Image (cartoon, rainbow, N blue to C red):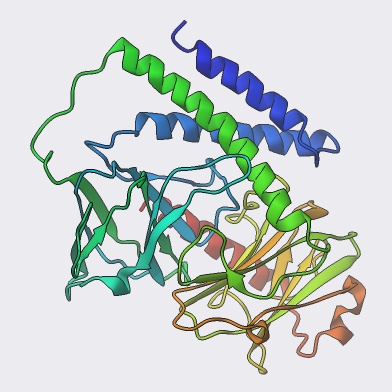
Length: 385
């Protein structure tokens, strides 16, 4: 049957999920199968959007298509490219903290991430007073508002990063191949549909294997309940630093992450499950940006990661995950970060927080519910963008 390759890939992906080294019981499997469902949906979308002659931007991740420790503060888009053609991207700059572009060579594998051939933000091109812009990508291009496509260029990734979920509005993006505007693609064929199912299957299995291996390589080899000094994000943007680690906590313990507020337009912390995806960020406070957080008088943010409610505004909810990943990001930087810009980690008893936190300031239940309601409203509005 036409769909046999994809059905076989789903069965293989299910086995990869069931045999993942971190799986300890039913709850891990339930989350793994939910992750599998998102991968199925995303792989179908990516395979059907694979058109390098008539490309368009598609949403790379979302609440139900998560992968690669997706940032709750970011809208991700991608379009496919060929390295011997010229493309025009037009758009309108929204009010987000950052708008960045990256060209990847598409070399995902269980041991590597795609090579980054170029990475820049909107400071690298002209944006009109009304927010509109036009930039071009192609082999041999040079000059303002143009960016060369190196051999092997396969995908253009765009990130819109929100710092203040309530006030910042997304922009608009469109892409076309310069010599195809006004033309039409060839009609569908059975052979092309067969190929799409084959590609979707390979993408599905590949993405699950890749990110399980990626997390083990870059996170699980670190000492537990620690975070690295700020460093350039592997395979990431030229103006993005990150601090990473993994935690393992008892229900009566809290991991307090103390970090200075940087001069970067975007700074945020998030948790991830052992499937290397974000936790529920709409209905729980599993992440915080600087505008969302309470900044102490000494200019630092003290995040409190715990299962039990510590009664503070900067509680990062574990949502039942006694193990997981922690990541801090700084974006749109104008300088290199040093160890002094990074986090300090202390593991203490939840009951000791009132005397251990230098600026302990309890939050009442009504104010906490308002915080969650604001997240739900902002997430729903952003996902329509």
